Length: 194
Image (cartoon, rainbow, N blue to C red; front, top):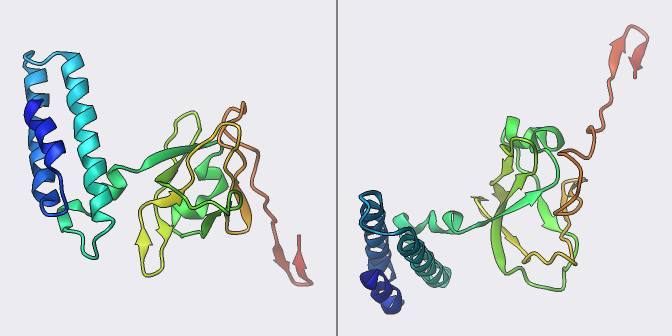
């Protein structure tokens, strides 16, 4: 724990890549000691808190760099928050999971505030398997979305393509807001019928 704390204190723009490797090593050693019964649960919890503080500090430094080393590229996704949404991705955004279609997703509230968080969207269903973790970027696809911090009295709403993807971040429905709208069109000799 002491070594990990010293690593946290020494993180700088000059050594963030090296200190990241040190932090990972010290956390892995602590987990091994916990599994062997040498480290108590409270000590393991402290190690986890220090480790994630190291990652947060390193991530803030990597965001200032033009080039991010390969081993730190996934840090943004690892550190992303999960915003649970009261819908089923499988029912409400089937093209997202079925054929990996990307939808433009953006907030429609709090537009006068710059987002301070990064996260992915996960559905709030009985199995919670649906998630949206691929977003449109200027040049490519990004794995996190810039988000506002959650305030229970000020729910966040996003617009996804032409449908409202997220109504509120909480609710008392089981898992769905209802069926998606569908139109069945049939081609007959006389033309189209619906």
